Length: 172
Image 1: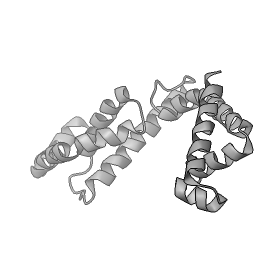
Image 2: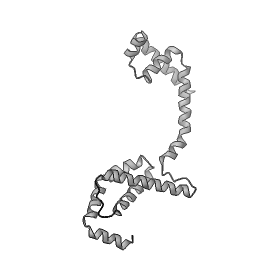
Image 3: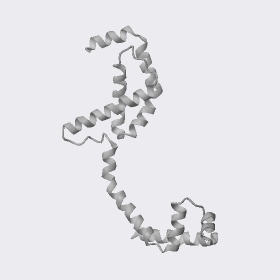
């Protein structure tokens, strides 16, 4: 559709620009936050602006019942288009998708998880048992004491020892 035709469409429906302006006022901050969760901060503002440009391009007869859903769908399509274009050009997308950033950061996180797992497994059994029940089992010290038939003070002492051992090992 040519630019002149688009202007004519907007002139046929004078409420459309006002409607888009109102949608922008109401939803742009929310959309920017939602897009930031999918992409980098630098890219989010561009995507939001492009989403509203695409919204203006919709035929004037289009009824917008769920503006947030529509804006989010348009934003996802923009990100998908950018990613496809970058893939087609045989270059990585310029921080368009957080998945690439997460993949790059995954190696150190995996290493830390492995060290933590080894540290916990290296604890003596009496300390490891209390530590796992408390930190991963979600049990209170009272519940652990009842389940293991020991006093709450013993649970507290074993937990403090387990934490001290873990901290010492993690420092290494």
